[in-house]
Image (cartoon, rainbow, N blue to C red; front, top):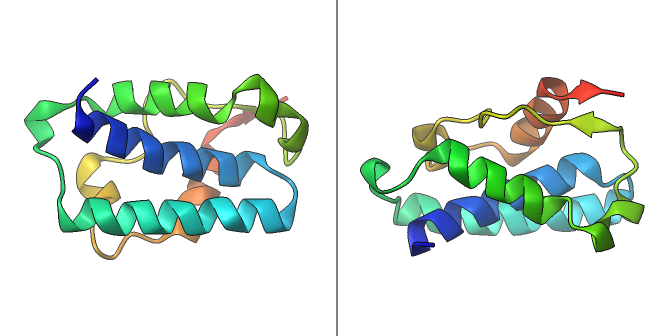
Length: 112
């Protein structure tokens, strides 16, 4: 994997974890991690031709849904969409709102 893909995946994975985890303190920690990673990403955004955001999304879902995290993921039973709910330019914008992003992930998911 290339470094740009890893950076985008990491931001998305923290956002997904924040949406999935029901413990408020742990969810907040994921939001803070996502915010820090996203700020770094916005200062050095990847070339849009160097990665596919949907590929980074798929990898982020896998990262966020690791078996060891599943006991904490009780917010809702989510089935996340196959396509990323953010465009790369949104994700790398300096005005990106992590809290709104977490809510968008929750609302975009099918609940079971």
